[in-house]
Structures are given as structure tokens and as C-alpha cells.
Length: 97
Length: 214
Image (cartoon, each protein chain N blue to C red):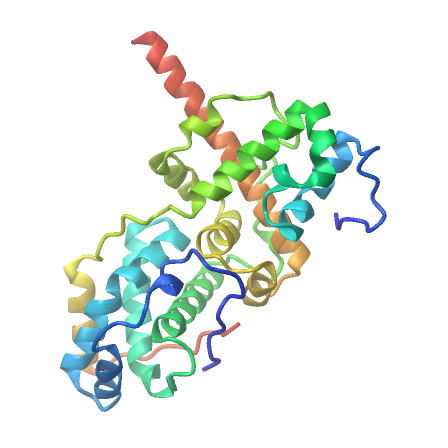
């Protein structure tokens, strides 16, 4: 649910917080735990604070994912060479975004 | 071919961090003129990045190798349209992303309507409750556990998670790529993170139980 412009953070309920959470993550710096508007709410609702911390931890760790990369096997290049030599390669136009 | 756009924010993705590669520009020009050695050099320079991107998006070694092959075959055909208006790695990145998306559409993954077509079944959907506080999650999120959890995500969740949190694309860019709304992209990302949280907590509990049994 999009974040209303007139949201009252002082009277926010956990159910509303959950609905707004995707936008809170997307609209700010990505650190909902550091949003001053939510300081009191998170202090009063430790389960919500735990959820935020967990999701922030996942997002932070995501940036280090798959960094230890490997090469594709040799057969990939062999297949490419083979197709190019046969001049048999035809593909469809990808639907570019 | 549409020129690739550079993501607006500082992107953590593999491609966008890399500075120009020595000898790359010469190899591109020579490959455009049909020099097979030059194309081989481009493959050597970029195979790991293309393969890693495919692996991230597909979560499957065999499919990732197939798409790496397709990406370089497509590159061979389209190299002449590269004008150097963006970094070659960025251009190749976008080309690869588009090929993978096309591949997924062919497999029946309708990325046009994410909510309706690639939402997991109810039993797979992330729980909407907050769950109890879990002091061990942060310490249990090691790279291997998270990579495994990402690989087990439903394809639609994984796609948005990888594009946003791993590759660093903005929601409006993802919406353009997947032909969905930005709200949809935000929602899918949130559900993906919630599902990952569940998977990591399950993994953490299993590890804990095994530790106690040992």
C-alpha cells in the first residue's frame, strides 16, 4: 500500500506499519530502522523492530552474494565456437526493456 | 538495440563497479570487423560476469551455462550496434538480463503480471505475521545460507530480489524491465525478503537442533 502523505506516525498500528513497510523501505534511504519518524514506534513495538532489523540484514548481505564467482565450464566456449563456425546461429530478437 | 541505462544510484552489481578494461576497446572494434581472436578475448574478459549474472537470476548451473552461451552468441550478432555510449560491460549486462527474461517468459513465467502469475502458492507465500524476535538471525545470515535461500525462492521473487538488492536496479527500472508497476516491484521485493527471512530462520532452527543433538 502506498504511503499516505498525511500518515500519523504517533498513532501507527503494527498492521498499518506492515502494509506501509514496502514503501518505507523503497522511499527512504533503505534504513527504516534509522527513520526518525519511526523511532518511537519501533521502540514501542519490538517485534516490528526485529522484523525491520532482519529485513535490513538480508538486504545488506545481498550485496555480497555470488561474489565468489566461477567460470562457466569449457564446453560453453566450445559450443559457441561450434555454432559460430557452422554459421548456424540464429536467435530471436530479445524483447528489450 | 536499446542502449542500456545506467542505474541512478550507486549500484552494487558486478558490472557497474568495474572500470574500463585494458585492451577491451580495441578488442571490441576488432571483433566488430570479424576478428575471431578479438571475440575470444571479449569472451575471456566477460565470461565470468555474464555467467555469474545468469547464475544469480536463474539459480541453476545448467541453465546459467546455456544462457551464457546464448548471451555471447547474441553478442556476436549485435556487437555492431554497440556505439560506446555506455560502458560495454553495462551494455552487455542489459543484453544478458533481457535474454534471461525472454528465456523465463518462454518457460511460461509471465513477468507481465507478477502478482497473478508468479506468486507462489499460498503454502509457499511468506507469512504475514511479524514472527517472534530472533536474536540469532543476524549472526546466522552467512553468504552460503543466503545464497541457498535465494536459490530456493520462487522465480518471480528471486528475479526482483536479485535485480534490486544484488544488482542495484531501482524499482522504476525493474518495472520497465518486467513490464509491471513500481508498486508491484516493491511488493515483490518485500515478499521476497520476508520469504528469505523465513527460510533463514528455518535454517537457523535446524542448525540449532542439530547442534543440540550432536
